[in-house]
Length: 180
Image 1 (cartoon, rainbow, N blue to C red):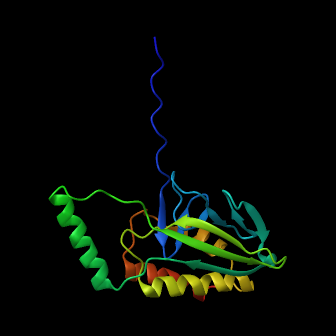
Image 2: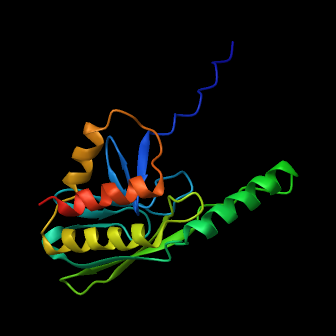
């Protein structure tokens, strides 16, 4: 008798807020996924990269952190894109694509600049404000004025795993920026 096939592991529950994906175990830049070539994880103590450019740097060694290529569009363009996708799917003309790739650039005190490709977590695109607020928060992490622990505490306090709308995500980012 053959053993029963093992079902695939369920996708971890998490929430995308700006350029961050937060779940019970990690804070990611971009979205984790089976097809991701690398992951960038933010902990209270360090920045960790998996994949081809694997490494770990304490925040005191990180001098710069930016995400390039984040898809950002106005609300009107995001809605138009969704409408086209729905229409194409209804006509059986749509094939889902891969999430857009973003480049995380990391500067370190040792002079070793690192780049890692991560996947966008936005279904169609982020708002420009989400991207700007996310970069402001990354700058605070680099300066030592904030810690990724604030994102983990927010996740632990959540009572739902539902998706947030763009204005809700912006509000959460503003709250994170206001915390010490």
